[in-house]
Amino acid sequence: MPYRVENSWSPSPAPAGTLTVTLHNLSDQPLAGFRLSFTAITRVAPGAPAPENAVFVRRDANYHEFAPPAGLSVPPGGAWTFRATGLNRAPMHRLDCVKTAYVTLADGRHVDAGVGDLVLDSAAPEAPPARLPEGRLTEPFALLPWPARVELRPGEAPLALTPADGTAREDLLALAEAGALHRRLFGAAQAAVSLSPVPGGRAVEFARDPGLAPGAYRLAFAPTIRLESGDADGRRHGLVALVQLLHGATESGDVFRFPASGVIEDAPRHGWRACHLDVSRHFWPADDVRRFLDILAWYRMNVFHWHLTDDEAWRFEVRAFPELTAIGATRGADARLLPQLGDPAATRTAFYTQAELRDVVAHAARLGIEVVPEIETPGHATAMLAALPRLVDPDEPAESYHSVQGYPNNALNPAVEATYEVLGAILDEMVEIFPSRRIHIGGDEVADNSWLASPLARALMEREGLAGTFELQAWFLRRLKGMLTERDRVLVGWNEVAHGGGVPPEGTILMAWQSSEVGIALAREGYDVVMTPGQAYYLDMAQSPVWLEPGAGWAGSSTPAQTYAYEADEGFPEELRAKVRGVQACIWCEHFHDRQYFNDLVFPRLAAVAEAAWTPPKAKDWLRFAAQARRCPGL
Image (cartoon, rainbow, N blue to C red; front, side, top):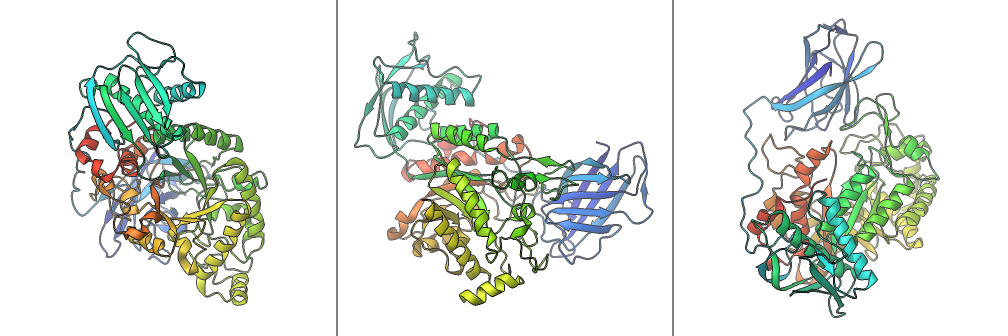
């Protein structure tokens, strides 16, 4: 690239310090009459002092644009440096400021610039600690998550798993699917399954035991392996466990063995064993999503929470409103929606067609995974409002409030009747695509002064006797819950759905993301709760507090050990523990620009959440987990 941006941070002046940005001209031409744009999660706040040696042109959430002082020219090999104070917060990690940048030349062309890490000016940073200890195996078997009961004697690995004579077609299909899952995740590995007899193979016979709990299975190892289950989920889990055992024994035979005899008795600890993926901040193609679903199935997770819309983009095709993707899924230097975290200058449009959505849902169903789609309401709706401006109160000032991420006026206005017509049409298309009875409607991070400058909203508040933003939000969400009920769907939302009086707890599932204490409070109010606290289960958080560790830091840091040790129902009174539906990892993609970065932050913590979701507390063992977790398949 002909240009490169370096950035550094100093803690003075308090509280947020100073950002120093340097643009290096690596081209063979002088640089004059230009502007520099960059995206940064540490932002220059509204009302900040004027920068030193630059002109602040504009900001849109995480997007910033600066110009040099009049007449400045940067020669080939030269550099321009400026400093900005009045930041929204102090950065915490090396990727907490400039993420992407581009130079707009005097002729209007945009040229992407390379970007370096944020440098800490005040001290030499500490190196990140090791994330996993060496670990130790209690038994030589490759199983993750670890089963409830394991009594096995090690033996030699068979060449492949084969069906016993007389195996029913549905069991053959299940065995073939388990083999296909293994092949997709480990394409170079020895095939784990053969549907035809092979020398050195080990036969599997299938049996039904209606006394087993949902999802439970029993494996008895003898010359013929017997798999007992009470339902299709249990059969699937047992087959994945078998394939895991064989994969470990064939790929790492010096460490793992295959059982010669003995028994595994196993059942899921929680019914909701989920992972969320944000594809709005950073788009993941359908092939990557299918690969991710395979990884979830490998760890016996059963819910995929697909975060399809946010301020940054609307990612799924709605035939009734093509502008949602034509405009709302398009960002670029010359687009209606400016670049945000991770975006280049070039205009890009990225979304899933309805055919792709159906294909992903079908793939998940074959893996026993429920896809719970999310559309963000009423907040985090910048992309939707840009695409459908008729949903805005025309008499509300354009920047009457800002979200915590810096977006102005980013919440659907409950007083605009067209909002409900649009949402109804969107829900109608969603229920045709997603068979899950659960639809996530967001409900988080609405700024506490939203809509108060809207004449329409003020009139609605007076008419309905509502006080403040959150009572108005609750009124909106109760109406939305009614729309879901009409479509035989259950409302799922973030914990702020309970604000302002909330929605009726019956038929509602809320996700406690802010803290464990929030989950306990929600259960006391009668809500069913999924525990996903940022302090333990947000996989975009840095894995240690040191500066050189990549990742977010607003919830602190969570090492794999902390993630593994977290107990979702700890602190819940015994009478409320039944309110805990289960647990969920969340992957927010502000910081994720490529697969390598994704894999670095997500693994092995995703496996740690999976084991916490499945394995009884008495069977958990951190050192045993650490010895196995390095073998995670990646995206």
